[in-house]
Amino acid sequence: MTTGLIDLHIHTTASDGTMTPARMVFHAAGSGLKAVAITDHDTVDGVSEAIAAGKEAGIEVVPGVEIGVDYPGEMHILGYYIDHKNSGLARGLSCLRRYREERNPMMIEKLRELGFDITLEEVAGIAGGNVIGRPHFAALLTRKGYTADNREAFDRYLGAGKPAYVKKDRLSPQDGIKMIIEAGGIPVLAHPRYLRIREDHSLKELIHELRGFGLKGIEVFYPEHTPEETERFYQLASATGLLVTGGTDFHGTNKPGLKIGTGPGDLRVRYSLLEKLKKNIPNPSKNNGSLRIY
Image (cartoon, rainbow, N blue to C red):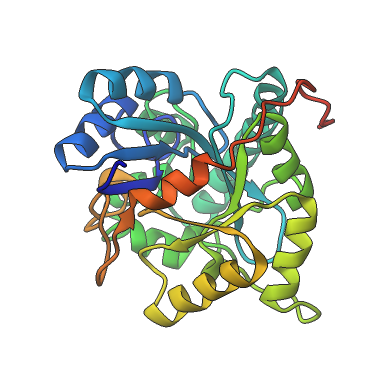
């Protein structure tokens, strides 16, 4: 039986991380991890490169994705062991990238109205040809001296409800989960502490609803979860028969102070959790993309 530590929530330059998929995999192997999951935002563009690097570095690479869905607060669904070449998944993610692209000029306009001399071309330069996200806006604001760091950029301007924030169109939670399932993957609720539960919902009721859509797990171990939250989410997963996962949400230098595979306190994710995840890999759907996204 394999033992050791893993990290099931990692971003690369394919979305808003600062390490290429290959470099990240070698970094993880050098840090002593046994397995990592590539979970870039709304894209699987880095998965093939990471898998190839994993074979060379001797580390297990789980193909994954992180999909933002429409819910008050911030709800993301992680998809593990997806068929990253599934045509239905490709169409769905292409649509989500288009939503991001439509939002970016509106964010530039808001920032310029606030007095910041920045252009979309400059943000694209930061992104280096990859999918543009808010961390790239934050990095540019910091580089130009408008903010001290990326955290301040989000706290003052780019976070939800802040002056330069623009909400992008998203899938419903049901459609996000369905897209992962139809690509043969395992859908898991990411960082539940970020949810703003509607007044007519308790977290348990929400989990029950998501389970009805096909949710299979909860990201229990996460750097920003307090010990009390971690215990609460663990007990909730146990009570509802859901899998337990965990990861750091590693972004490289876009999240300073965060190390791959470890987090505040005693955050360590054991390989045994991945073994349980593997036992729940469904047979890849023969329905190669019936989800309709317009």
